[in-house]
Image (tube, rainbow, N blue to C red; front, side, top):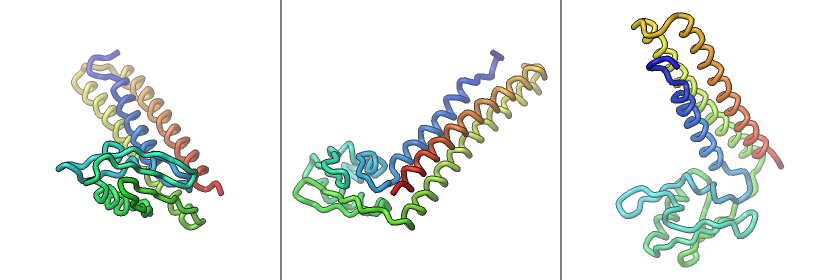
Length: 186
C-alpha cells in the first residue's frame, strides 16, 4: 500500500454510486405494487422534507395496490400532495388517514419510457464511477510528481483502479439489464 493512495476508498465511493443507482431503480414503477415505489417521495412536514416512510406505514395489500397509513391526521393532505407531484403517475384515494393507490397496468409506450429513465440513471452512475476513477488517477499523478510514488507503482495502481472501475461498471450494467427486463415483462 502506497502512502496517500487507498484503493479501498475509491472502491467505497464507487459502491456508493452503485447503491444510489439501485435505490433509484427501485423507485421505477414496473406495474406491480411495491413499497419501495414510494420511498423516493419526500413530504414537506414539520418544517422539513421527510420521506413518506417516516410519516406513514406503507403496505401492499394486493399485487396492484399500495396502502399508506399516515400516522398524523394533519399530514394526510401533505402526503397526498407529495405523491401526486412526484412524477410517478400515481393518484392516491384518501380514506380518512389511509391513502390507497391503485397501480395501473403499464402500456408499451410507458414501459419504453421507464426503460429510458432506467438507462439515464445507469449512465449517471457510470459517470459517477468514472469521476471516482479520474480522482484516483489524478492522485496517482500527483504522488508521482511529488516523488512519493515510483512509475512502476503508478502503473500497477492505474491497472488496479481500472480493474475496480470495470467491476463496478459491470455491476451497473447488470442492475440495469435486470430492471429493464422487469419493466418490459408483460
